Image 1 (cartoon, rainbow, N blue to C red):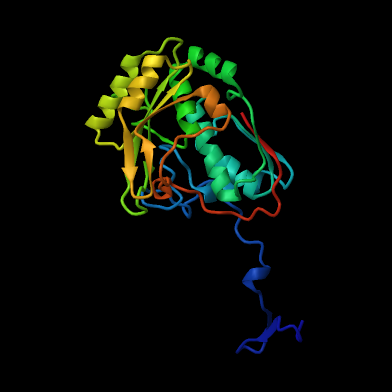
Image 2: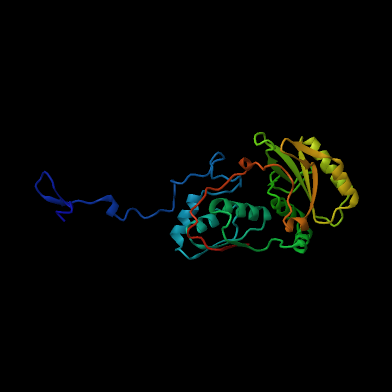
Length: 286
């Protein structure tokens, strides 16, 4: 102990055992945590979800209540902070949320944090046109949010049910690599669609001073709809021209077709910090 520097001599002449802080067990964690602050709007971690919790908070909870390889269940996973923490700490996890808006947000969050190849099994979302039709019939708002996510658009407004002014989503892009412009996304999940809906989209694009409009429809467009969209002409840039109004069916989106447009502006999307992916496994999102 003397050679290890654990004995010191006091002025009284009596030896004393020397203690080092890193050898002490410390104070047990209490139930009041003041060292992790709530997220503010300007923080990089913030994704825009109203009830988002700090990742550090969920990391502490997951670390304290589970071991690597354990299963973490979050039945109301919101923007996915718990599943993010579980993935980062090499836990198995299952996340559940009732809204397709949350599911699409979590998928993007995990891809940003752990890379596009992160293995996630997603259940409960449409896998074909039949599933999309069932979702549209059950809840048109959930269908709209799901469809908007297929074209990497940002859901419009405060995500509450109600009048949307003909706008279900927005796609921001940079036609010249500098100035950011926008495209209006309109989603229709009904069995009957008509040319009036395309005219309404054209009017909305003009009213909002947008450059393009994307019309997503579950049903096949009619001939007059296609003709009306073509009559809107082209959006011309120095790098190419694009149909100003584009109609895409859900079936086409399943086949991989996407809007024809200039470079999408990634700066408008909040991104999760990139994490180490060396120990990742496939997880489930329901």
